[in-house]
Image 1 (tube, rainbow, N blue to C red):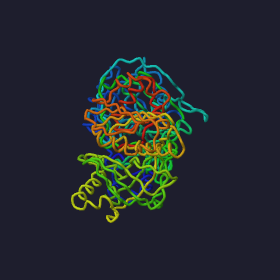
Image 2: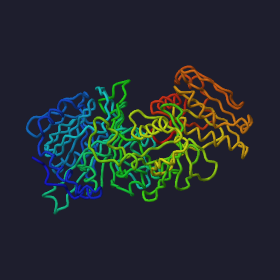
Image 3: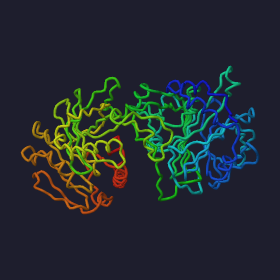
Image 4: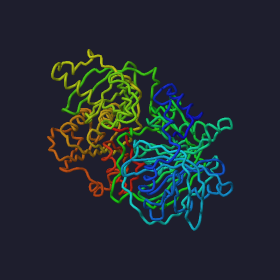
Length: 632
């Protein structure tokens, strides 16, 4: 039997704002929330969970997300003595919000609670909510009797798989500031903690107004949000407002609905490698449509949490990710989006004002690498190294809602927007023509379509590659983005097709030596399996008559197991070929690489992570390396 009598006012508002209020497929979703604890859920909670995130309220009605776990870090700390009741035997450490919030139970014997159980080995999760009916606190432990009156099995989307094992801990508090002043900002190490997270537990509260309390009684909620590491952002302007994007889900809207009705939320982060736990609470607001996109361009729904209190407990979680293991990012997670204030050089057009781009030519460099040139209907300002955002939905069809897509999970969040570095360079302040050099991505919807067109033309109508205008292939230009800028001494590091930002940069720099006499000293590290395709693209932008050894110097360390067929080079270019893959050893043996140079990095995420690690070992912090803010 359903636990609910319908959607409460907050959930109704969210459905209205998302234009889902008249969609028959969502109108009765609430009926799937059970009013009792199913037997398989009880078995799941008692058998598979090493810890349970639980929401409770403090004396001010602010939610906090606790992490309840047994002393040994193993499953089995939750018992199921009867029907719809769970008994949790949890260890308590200093800073755990449950200790303070338990005072509410001591004062009136009433305490709302909600939890979410997740088996991180297989992405299974089940939610529950109800009230604490019995509580014993003694000698750093708690026995909690929880009566469940809401239960829901959740989908596995956005859960990142990780192998956990029990460990011995020595918990201690690093920060405890449950009430922040107006002037306070979060400490920088806490901000880094948030920006590096790929998982967060979000606690919410629905406080019923008197006329709704019978049909929709007050309750709290606990949920999980996951994505790629960095998907949660912190506003640099105040150093305490956290932006949590909302991805396509099951459309119950319980968490957003609670926030809409009662604008508070908690966020709890776990470092699964160290066992550190960050507890946050604050004022929360949902933003939709244009309001959301002003904060996080291209994101149509998000939640903003203004933090009012935080606690950081070190070495607290008695479970850790297995040493040497890597988490598996959910295939449903979309690319990271950044805040408008993080990328001041981003220009995003309103939907009604988007320029059009028409395909004018295609140059095939290989079967999987090509340059596509486009003309815009309006002048664009594109600086060297910047990227263009294009909307291919007019060509490939707009996204339709689907909850799960097991055979192509990326389709669930695929809005057909793509971001590519512009590989051409304009020496004027604005341009209408631009080129993008790309690699066909295996299974890629957009690159697959573009390369299919290119291959068909090369076989049936090769002259159309040189002039593709008659095809009338037109798409929208969404915006221009990228914060790469140029200093006089540069270190560029590129993995494969990640060389594209540097194609336009080098053309611009060569031209500037001729027009203004600027001096440039560039060191490029290129790791690629296709040197005979990518290096000519770069070196073709050099002119022996336009570059002089006293104004322009380029050193290239090429890492490739393939032979490089080197042709004549300008005297300003030196290539050193390493017949191997790039590794951290090269950086360790050449620690002066970064001395006095601005460092730029672009490539696949695995390559970027290895480079960041290598440079961190010689004292270059991650923040000292500029990277493109999009996925290839």
